[in-house]
Amino acid sequence: LVSLEHHKERSTVHVRGVPIGPDTITLIAGPCAVETPEQTLEAARMAQAAGATLLRGGAFKPRTSPYAFQGLGELGLRILSDVRAETGLPVVTEVVAAHDVEMVAQYADMLQIGTRNMQNFALLQAAGEAGKPVLLKRGMNSTIEEWLMAAEYIAQRGNLDIVLCERGIRTFETATRNTLDISAVPVVQRLSHLPVMIDPSHSGGRRDLVLPLSRAAVAVGADGVLVDVHPNPEEALCDGPQALLADDLRVLQQSIEELAEVL
Ligand code: PEP
Image (cartoon, rainbow, N blue to C red; front, side):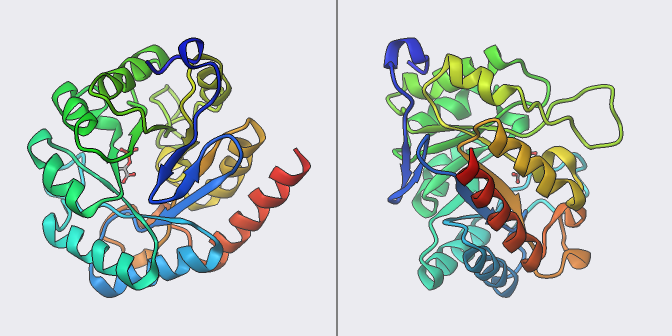
């Protein structure tokens, strides 16, 4: 269902009218985690001012340590929904458990499945039945074939509105959190009709790498970029070192736009 062979041409997925696909480069930006109404609104305004057309933000945070901030849960979803009402930005947010899908889908415009859940098949199936587009991150330990098969689980339940997101894989390299597999973009585009984005924030784990990795993504033909922004990264409850500030995001958006024009 997700193969290019059966579909012939590459797809565009619409998230509340915002296209993600071959004719555009979509910028999704927002805080890694929803912390407070003020922080979320401020991050959304930063995203919007820079030209992002979708707001990201985690209310359920699957952290490596159970002692790290786990997200605000449904309260976080309510904050996202208020911020959408205020800014008009559609909301992309992660769901981590099959039994939460229906509830998260009531607030979200796009359901995100994170790297750690890429092969949570019950979750994939539930997301496939929720009636919302799905952003499927690549498992950090998964091959491209496994990633496409995960997408197939969603598609099999009748939902072809799937966007794939390369977010780095585990290698022997320790200079970055994970290694962004930039070749995944053209490889997947030859195998599947689904749009492919990259997440340079979670792959590198470092603010200074977000711009060069975003440019690399656009250069290889990615359909969009998903980045973290925070009004005060030093105080962030989650992944502050990778969060962009307002000026960084503006530079990023200009830079990818200019690059897309010359390509
Ligand atoms: C995220 O985007 O908030 C996230 C946790 O990403 P990943 O699943 O890629 O680590």
